[in-house]
Length: 150
Image (cartoon, rainbow, N blue to C red):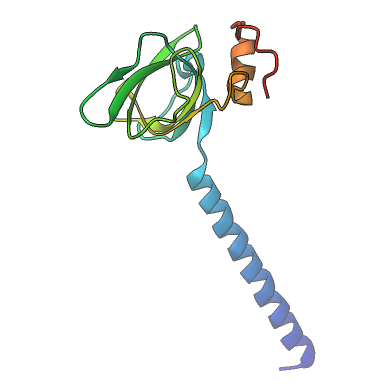
């Protein structure tokens, strides 16, 4: 094997290693992606059961119900639609009705009930996640004078 062939073999091996690493990283990211939806968008979305999404909106007033153990059900709304959510675990301290929330999870087996494994709530009286605020504003929902949205 000549010197030129050895050099090309080493360069080819390095390029193949880098391509394999990039493909593995891309595959890993595609498995962890969770798209963001508001309840009004879900009517148009064609989601397969078990698809992980983030559901954002406002916790509907009067919808929070405590079940057995640590199971809580509530509805997330954007005033155009609402989605019932079931969550088992401890809710954030700042979780309450009428406030912004983002729940991450999936719909199980074509059921309309969204099963969340993560619930995020606002951190102070003027904060709402930017995605939620933008979608709600685009749909003409008044945010109650919360112009300081970050």
